[in-house]
Image (cartoon, rainbow, N blue to C red; front, side, top):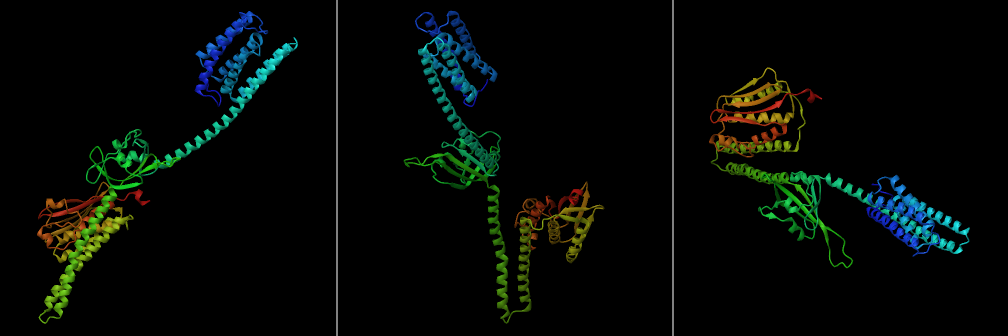
Length: 548
C-alpha cells in the first residue's frame, strides 16, 4: 500500500477512503434533486451529462473504497480522476457556487495527505482554473450575480487552502523537530544500552512492582541463562538467601528503602545447587517532585550485582592464614625468648656448666632456623601469589638436575643416604619459571632427605612424547592414606611420631602446590607407609613456538 506524503497516517487514509465514498453519493442525490426540479441550478446542462458524471464518480468511489491504492502512480491517477469529475460536476450540474463546493476541501486534504504540499498547491490551482472557466463562461452571458457568487466561493476555498497550507507547514516543522528529537533520544538510548551491555557487573532495571524492564548481557551470564528476562518478576528470576539461609524478597526490600542500599551478605543458588556470593546494590529511580511537592514518586528500581565469591573466599582465606601464621610463629618465638632469658640467668649462676649453656643455645638456634625456614616459605608463597619472577625462560633440564644433585649430595651423605640420579637419554629443555621449578624440586628433595632414615633418594627425569616427568623418590617413612589427602594444606603436619621428631613448618608442600598451579601442572603423590614416597609432576618440552 502506498504510504503517501509526510503527513500520511493510517487514520487519515481511512477517513479519506470513507469520504471518497460518501461525497459522490451525496452529490449524486443533490444532482437528482436538480433533475427532479426540487433544487434550481442555472448551470444544469442536461440529464445525460448528469448521468455520465455521476456514474463514473460512483464507480470510482466504490473502486477506491474496496481496493486501496498500492503505488504512487495509482494514487495520482485516482486523485486526478476525482478532480476532473468534481470540476465537471461543478461546471455542468450544480454550479460553482453550490454549498457542496465545500467538499473540495476534502480534495485539498487528500492531495496534501498523499502528495504533501505540492499536491495541495496543484489542487488549489485546479480549483482556480475551474472557477476562472466558469466566470469566463457566464461573463459572455452577462450573468454578474453568478460571477459574484463564483468569486466569493473562490475566495472562501482559497482561504481554506491557505489555512491548510499554514497548518501543514507548521505540522511539518513540528514533525521534523519531533523526528529529530526521537532520533536523538534513540541515539542516546542506544549509547546507554551499549555502555550497560559492556559492563561486567550485572544490571537490572525494574518498574515499581519489580517487573524487569531492562537488563544487560552480564545479567544473563551471572544467572547462567539465555532466556529473556523482560516482563518477569525479579524475585522469580533472582532467588536470593541471606547468610542464615533465609529467603530475601527484593520487591519488599525495594519498598522499604529510600536510598541506595549495598549488601554483600546475599547468596544466589543455581538450579544444580551451586551457590555463589553476591554483592547487591539496589536503589530507587527517582522522578521529579510534583508541582505541589507533596510526595516523591519512584519510576522503578535499579539493581547492580557482582559475583564476589572468589573475593570473599580470598578474604576468608587471608584472615585464616594470618591467624594460623600468628599462632605458628608464637610458639618458636616464645621458646627462643624463654631460652635466651634462661641463658642470661644461667650465665650469672655459679653452678652453670658449659654443657647446659650449649644445650640452651642449641635449642634457641634450632627455633631460629625453624623461623627462618617459615619466613623463607612465606616469602616464596608471597612471590608466587604476586607473580614475582614468574617470567618463563629456557631451562636445560639435565643441567638443572645435576645442579640440584651437587647441591644436596653432601646433605644426604651426612645422613648416610645415597642421592641417586635416573635421567633419560634425551631430556631437552622446558620453558618455565626457573625460580618456581627449582623451589618445587628443592622442596621434594629436602623432604625426602629429612624423612628417610636409611636407603636412597632418587631424582628422576624422563621424557616421552614431548612430556618430561620429574620425580623425587625415596625409601623413607612413607605417608599414610589419611595424611595423603591433607599434606598439601597449609601448616598441616602428620601426627606420625617420626614426623614430629623432625622440625618442619607445614608450609613446604602447600607452597609446592601453589607453584605447581603457577606452572600449569599438578603434583602426583604415590606413597606407602614404611616403604617410601614419590612426588612427581610433568612439563612439556620446549617447542619452536616458545622460542619466538
